[in-house]
Amino acid sequence: MDELMIKVENVAKEYRLGAIGGTTLRDELQRRRAKRKHLEDPTKKIGAKDVNIGERFMALNGVSFEVKKGEAVGIIGHNGAGKSTLLKLITRITAPTSGDIYLNGRVASMLEVGTGFHPELTGRENVYLNGAILGMTKKEIDAKMEDIIEFSEVRQFIDTPVKRYSSGMYVKLAFSVAAHLDSEIMIMDEVLAVGDMAFQNKCIQKMREVADSGRTILYVSHNMATVRSLCDRCIVLNHGQIQYDGDVNTAIGIYMNAGDNAEKIYYGPSDLVRGNHCTLQQKLHSVEILESNTNRFFYGEPIKIRIGWECRECNQELFLKVFFTNTARGIVGGGFLGKLEYADGMN
Image 1 (cartoon, rainbow, N blue to C red):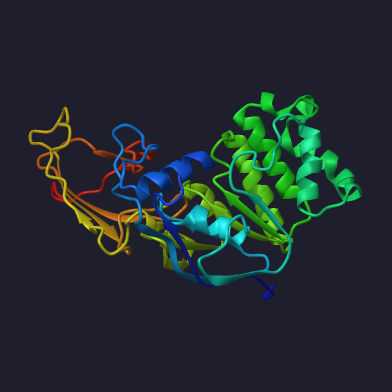
Image 2: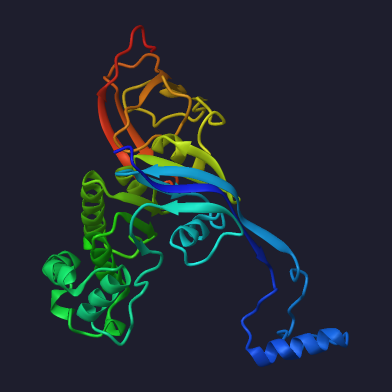
């Protein structure tokens, strides 16, 4: 289990903005001719500006980490942090500007939905195509074909050209191929974003089994629930550099800007609903989170709080309801907790 599978050593990737555009060879020759004569670029779009041309952008800058056999490592970060660029370097789609990347084994990569699929080929033919690209023989693919089709849930359409597949069917078949082929390293970039919830859970379980069998997983996603369910370790990228590498929950907390900056104690100045048999209002005056330095928690994590409230001259038992919301302010849990205990009209 200590065998090294991936080693990224001081890797940097630099892009020159505007240096190479989406133009033809003829356009490029016209552009160079106009530049020599100090004329306006003939290929420039109306209203476009040249402010970025010649600027350099470091997509990655000095990234170093190692991944051992059997590890499931999550890579998270904001859009533009360098996640997809890093995976493209590891899969050798593009080369780093500087630094070295060492791989110990074959790589099965899914950087986009249906990557490597030919739209005119059927699902079955694309399975053979992907297997051949990964270095497998026809005999090896034949042995796994039924398992791939069964897992993908697209048996009825397996001999239909994939150009007629929905995005969900694409991702199901693509993931099934990657999960069953004999590669030592699996690399996935947001591949579960399209599948339905049941298939996502099925994929997470399958990836967990793959990792337990000794294969290595690199997983990029903005879905923190799947990262937390699958990964043993997490890397946070920020502006092309590693901000954190370690515990999954800590990494997610950093990504979500949680941590020491979160307030520990909240005060509720608003009065609660007035009771039918109370002469004075019941008032919530404090809520304190105990044994934690953050106000954000994850599913399954225990939360211990102390609630301060007051109610004078109440002659009826009081009951408490508590609800929890996510970052989108949707209710994710809570409900009726039971009777409140108080003494001398105050607690």
